[in-house]
Each structure stands twice: as C-alpha cells, then as structure tokens.
Image (tube, rainbow, N blue to C red; front, side, top):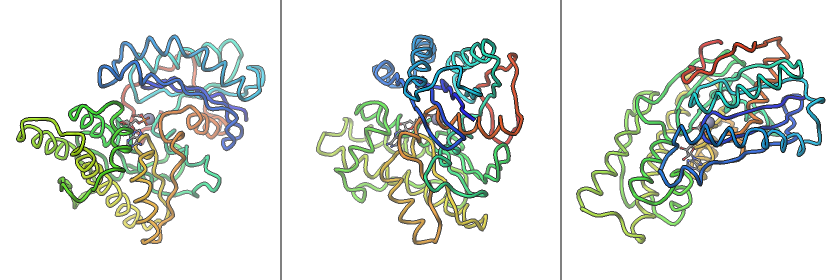
Length: 335
Ligand code: KG4
Ligand code: ZN
C-alpha cells in the first residue's frame, strides 16, 4: 500500500509517504526547535499553533518529494497519542479531513509503536520477537515486541525519561536546547571518567534518572557557580556515560532474561552517538544483534507512523471520524 503518515505529537510537524511498509518515498520534518529553544522546553500552546501553520505545507511537500498525488495514496496513518493533546489534534484533524474528502481508510497509531517500527525500515530489519528499548523525551521503556499491538512492557522509568534528564541537565548547565543533542556533541571532547555520577536501581529493569540529575544540581550548588567552558566537556561526558550505562545494561539484561538475541533501540535518545556505540559494542560481546534506526528515524518522524499504518490497515484495522487524541496511551493497551 502507499501510505501517508502524519505525526504531530510534540514539536515536530512531520509527513511521509511509505510504500509497502518498507520503502520511504519521502520524509518531511518541520522542527520547532528554534521557537521553543528560548524557553528551554516545549511550550504546548505555541507548539499547537506552529503545527497548524506547518501541517498542510509539510503534507504537500511529502507528496511532492515522493512524486505522487493525493489520488495515489491508499491509506492514512496518524499519530493518535501519547503526546500533547493540542499538538496531536492538529495532525489528527488534518488526517480525518483528508480521509473524509478522499474516502480513504485511516488508522490512529501509537507513537511508541511508531518508534519501534522505525527499525523495520532498516535494510536488514529484525525478525520478531525482539526486545525494544524506546528511549525519548517522554519515555524510557523496555518492551518485548511480538507483533504489532502485541507488546509487553518489561521495564520503565519511575520518574524522568532519559531524554528529559538530558534536556533538564542542559538547561541547568545553560548550554542549550535540545539538551540531548548539545550534550552528545560536547561529551565527545570530554573524559567520562573524571566525574562519577550515580547509577540508580541496578537490580531492576525499571529506570530512575532523577538522582543523576539531582547530583548534577548539587555539584553546581556546592561550588556556587556554573561550570566553566573548560570544565563542561568532562561534566557532560560523565553525565552522559551514567545514563548510557544503565540504558545498555538493563536492556541487555532484559534481552538475556527473555532468551532472545535481538534488540531494537529507538526513540530520540537512540540518536545519541555514545549510546549507539555502546549498544553495538556490548551487544557484540554478548552475541546480541543490535538494530538501531538511522538518527533521522530515531527522532520524531512520520515514516515510522506510516509503517505501523501499513501493518494495521492491511490487517483490516480502521478508525472512524470520531477517533480522539489521547495524551496517555500505554503500548500494551489495544485501541
Ligand atoms: O523521540 P523524540 O524526538 O520525541 C519524543 O517522543 O520525546 O525524542 C526527543 C528527545 C529529547 O529529549 C532530545 O534531547 C533527545 O531525544 N535527543 C537526544 C539526541 N537527539 C535527540 N538525546 C541524546 N543524544 C542525542 N543525539
Ligand atoms: Zn518520539
């Protein structure tokens, strides 16, 4: 099928055309990073307004890039949740309008399932079942993925998500936004061994990142000043290493427990170069095949939503024009 995917759950307005669930014909992403940057985080009201401005041009661009017209599209997949309600509604209303006007089948997609599905766009995609770490700004969850709409959560964060910890740390250090990207870049110049940050909940598959963030805050408070430019690289390298360490160790523990040899790492934080490096390294040592989408398919995009749409629509799943956006939607729950 030729699917138009639409994603607007947070601060990226995205549309993509994907053929048969594995060929990306276009993948357009309009980022609002510059708009929210000055506030150090996403401002929901502004995000909705910006989505409203961007959604139609982004969709038109995705059709143009794919070299197709709306008349060629056979189905529409749209992010229904989880995410910011005002943001989600922009994509969802647009999807409904197109589906209604063109008489096309439409399906609402879980954003987290979308992140996992990005791995199916790899040249050599993983066979099911596999363990998946979804690590983003809003989530840090380990799943056993058997099939679409057939997942079990094996572990999750009890407080901050990993991406949130990066973003809050960067805000605290006053080094820029989005934090994950800035820290990834700056950490390359630093030595992760200089400052030891705590690793929480070692014996569980659940995560906690508030402690590592607090220890950074305490360091700043104790010295009564921000870190200098010379100090920062070692600080962020140590901070990043603590987060990467627990993400890799717990996920590979879950893989071992599940007696599975395949793991998918996805979501915005999976774009992190140190996380990718560590997963490939440690996976190899443990005989685990590691599947990580390219960075552009780790952060929010609509191609991943179209992939889920392909699988749900070909199985006959359809949503009506009464479909509502949902801010919370655990992946284990069927819609
Ligand atoms: O998946 P995503 O684009 O949106 C959500 O669903 O949340 O993830 C965004 C998160 C942000 O917290 C951002 O700081 C983080 O992903 N991120 C990174 C990197 N690129 C984005 N974190 C670490 N290293 C990166 N290179
Ligand atoms: Zn996301």
